[in-house]
Length: 86
Image (cartoon, rainbow, N blue to C red; front, side, top):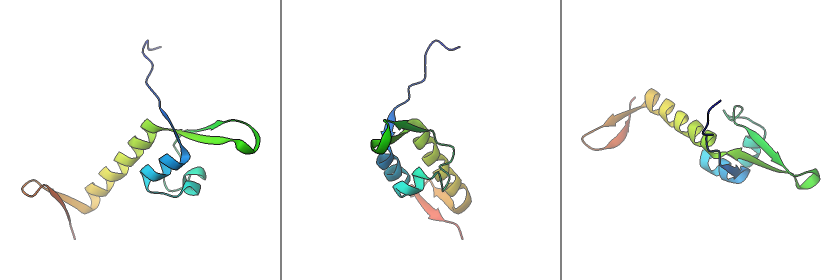
């Protein structure tokens, strides 16, 4: 068991959806690649709130970017820009 616990920051569903450029209902229903994110339910009854772990959202976003860059984009060091490979 590690002595230092990894920091986990909770964010609201709306913030996670904004970071991932998805609709809140898509993230809530665990669609479009969000099925592996940890959904934490806070509260009871009608006022129940859903939070996600910020570090997991950031990791998902970075993996989606890397996947897209690896398939469709080429990085030009001279211009410092991304170019579409066709």
